[in-house]
Image (tube, rainbow, N blue to C red):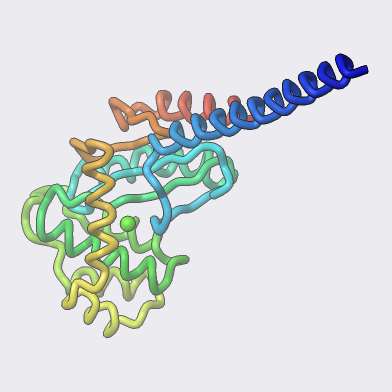
Length: 222
Ligand code: CA
């Protein structure tokens, strides 16, 4: 009898180890998944459209002064939006990049203010601002308070006096700084840079490659 009790104690102990072990294993599994997703920029606080519960996140790092970003917005963005955002398959976020200096910064400050004050109008503002980028001689100064207020008046319902005050005081500087940290963290070297679930596109204009990455991400999670 004593021997049996000992055996039971051993079995119970082994069971406890097995359960604890399985729990630790499962936990470490979810940690692995977590570190994978940290390869994707955090989109917390970033303008995001589409399905925020989607397993596939697409992030654009863009600069309002960059001619390639304007081109991307005209050539790739409309397809991406109609194929995947309007159909609620993915989320799409935009992060500001300041590679062109003061004007990039001013445009980003305005965009962040618009997003805070009238988030529903953000994407219209953004699109219109890129439209305002001159097709030629884009290095000439065109991002001014006046231009930003004009675009805001046309595309949003924000209080223009407040927007102007926020631009003059760089009220949204912290938000722009968060974006700049992401640019550094993800080694963004050119704009636009497109990241699909942690993978940065070598050629952001290769829509087939963007589609392939998105479809792969969607299939994995079906
Ligand atoms: Ca931002």
